[in-house]
Every structure is written in structure tokens, then in C-alpha cells.
Image 1 (cartoon, helix red, strand yellow):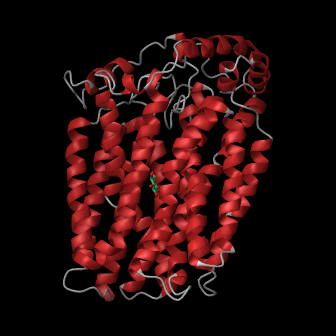
Image 2 (cartoon, protein in one colour; image 1 turned 120 degrees about the vertical axis):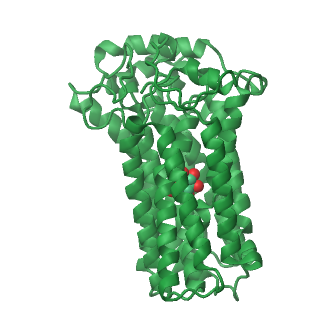
Image 3 (cartoon, helix red, strand yellow; image 1 turned 135 degrees about the vertical axis):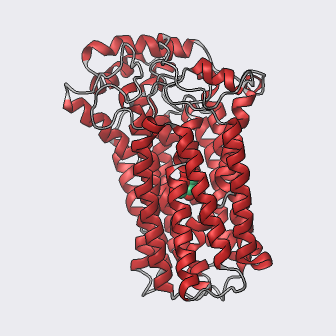
Length: 510
Ligand code: BGC
């Protein structure tokens, strides 16, 4: 489909390279690299893939701690639950700051230097973690890695969205989400592979490899044409676009980018005004629900949980690899389905699956904290169902929707607010999970997540609009409360005002 900014969303471009599944109108500059010139296409996809290494690092660095904790917690004289929570969640504090700083930095110095700095911070952070002489230094290292993770979560989709032509944009932006889940899976495999030696330093340190690759890869890329034009550097932008688009499209796209920039950037006041606030609330509440329904207690803590419940360290890590693989596979399924079934069926259906998984996990712990035999199988199956259901719905749909539901002028600022809400909610859940677990037990915690998932479903059913094939005006009208009709069916995509066409799904960072 074609969204407010003219960006096709996930799946529309895959496979065919032709017209989007939902019939979106690619507009005058649509499909410039859809078929004829495979060299241009390779360059665009290559640029997005290199940049998505940032997503891989986001996934790796958030996932690696789950296995590392098993061995880390006996180091430095033994770590309490709270100390383990701090190692895990200080990364998230860094990420909140990183998302904010990267938004401003990428506007000021450009996307490419921001990604280069992010890669350097990644390298420094993971090396500091790998060679840490003490627990406090490890905490600092996790904070530093967090800055890079938060920055990456913002600037990677921003840059990909700005170099991608509309027809390929949805699939290319989704590459980032896929890279996140792949990064998590790779970290689990490495945790498992290193479990016999218990070498948590190497688990952290190996992230330096993709970080260096990100740095080297981005050096071969050019600055975003959008940013260059904003700075009045049209000639450079023309040079960049000439590498990414067929000759006939370059001038037209430059004119269209200029028109978008001419609209100016909106401030915080507009974000809280009547027109945008309802959409802002949907994004922020979805961000909060994505986290308070418990995904990262599984992503970060599953091995510790299963190990404490009686599984051996390497069985717990192997079960974790299975969970990570399901996460990747179901993300691929989601990417293929989003433009066919729409967002709401996946979001709501997936959330129902998450509730079922959490209820089953709660049941596995009834009457005993020790999981053996059938209980262990039930617990692992529950976590697999839960994670797979998240991956097909709330995982990708949250990031996709916040790129769709905001008007062009406020998209970057609103996305920044929603991303920070996501990191903040993630932090609150992660910092309190182990403490909560020992206070109210597995049944209590997973029961609580099941309850919050039911609340999320209620909210999604009532408030989240279907964006597949719908116009910006219809989405905005829904979110203003004038006849919210989440399942109002599809409407033909609107014609794109030329000025909106080239803008990526992220727009300008706050
Ligand atoms: C969430 C992350 C989570 C990941 C798991 C993302 O959509 O924002 O918090 O760790 O999915 O795949």
C-alpha cells in the first residue's frame, strides 16, 4: 500500500518488483529501480542491507545478555537479582538517550556521520564489556552500548527510508526488523556455542565484528539525498540520486523532496494539538503495550528462567535458540502477510496467541517453581507460542504503524516520542522482572502479562485503525475520534500530493 508519505509498507514490493500488493500508487517517481536496471537495484538493496547491520547489532546486543547472565551472575563474587537486572536494563537507559541524541545529531551533521559515530560507539562499548575489570565498568559498558542501540533504532530506518525508492521502501524498512530478530538469534547461537566454556566476555565481544562491518560498510555509502537537499547541497544530492535512480527520475525527485522540505518542520505544540494527539496516543500506547506484555522478559531472561526451573544450562540455551528461530521465521511470515491480510488481523490474532502463551506459562508454574517433565515442556511450548505470536503481530506491526499513522509534518518527532516510550517501558519491565518473579512467582508474573495482553487486545480492537490500502485522511479522521472505524474496510489509496512522495517512513528526527 501507499502510506501518508508515499512509502509502501512491508511486503508490497517483494518478489514481483512490480505493483504493490494492495494497489498503492507509486506516483511519478515510483518504481524507478523496480526492474530495468539491476545495478541500481543492487545498489539500493546493498545500501539498505549494510545499514541494517545496525539492526543486527540492536538485536545482538539486546539478546546476548540472556545467555551471558547464566555465567556472569557467578562472576565478580556473585551478582544479586538486582545487579543482574541492572546489567540487562542499563542498556535500555542508554537507548532512551541514544534515540533522542541520534535524532538531533542526524539532523545536524547528517545521517552518514551519525551512523559512523554509532558504529564507533558500538565497538567501544562491546570491547569495554568484553575486557571489563569490574562490575561497575561493565555497567558503564552496557550504558555505552545502549547509546548505540538507541541511536541505531532511530537512524537506521530513517536512512533506509530516505535512500529507498517508494516501491521498495516497505520491504527495505522491514529488513531492519528482520535484522533485529536475526541479531537476537545469532546472539543465542553464540551463547549456546560458548556455553561449555562459559566465556561471557567473548559473548559480548563478538559484537565488535558486525560493528566494524557496519563502520566499513557505511563508509562506502553516500549521504541521504533528503538531508543534502535540506542543506542546499543539491548538486551532491543529484550525484547520490544518479547512483540510485534512473536518469529520468532524478530532477523530479529533487523537486519533490524540496516541496516536502518547503512545508517546514512541526514543533511539539503541533504534536499535542487536536489533529495529531489521538494518533500520538495510539503510537505511545502501542509502544507501551508492546513492552508491558512481556516480550523482553522472554528475549532477555528465558535461559535464566528455564535454568532456575531445573533445566541444565545448555538445554536452557538450546530452548532459547528455538525461541529465537521461531522469532525470525514468524517475522518473515508477517512481512509476507502484512499487505495481504492487513495489520489488524495479524495484530489482534497475534495478541490472542500471546495471551494463550502467557496463560499456559502461568499454568506451568502453578504449585511449583520447579519445572520437570510435562511442566518443562509446557513452559517451553508456552514461550514458543507466545514469541511466535508476538513476531507475527505486535512486534513488526508496532514499528510499521508508527511509520504510517502520522502526518508528514510531524512524523519524525512523533516517531521519536513513540520510540522513546518503547525503550522506557522496556526499561521498567526489564528492571523489575526478576524482583517481581521472586515476589509473586511465575504464575503471578505470567498471569499479570496475560492480563495486560487482554487489555492490549481490547485497546487494539477499539483504537488501532487498519492502515492497509487506506488514505492518510481516513486514518487521521479515525484517530481524531470522528467515527473511529478500525475495520471500515479498504479504500483506494489516495493520489500522492507530489510533495509527499519521496519522504521516507521516518521523516525527520525530532
Ligand atoms: C521490540 C524489541 C524486541 C524485539 C524482539 C521488537 O519489535 O521492539 O523490544 O526485543 O522486537 O524480536
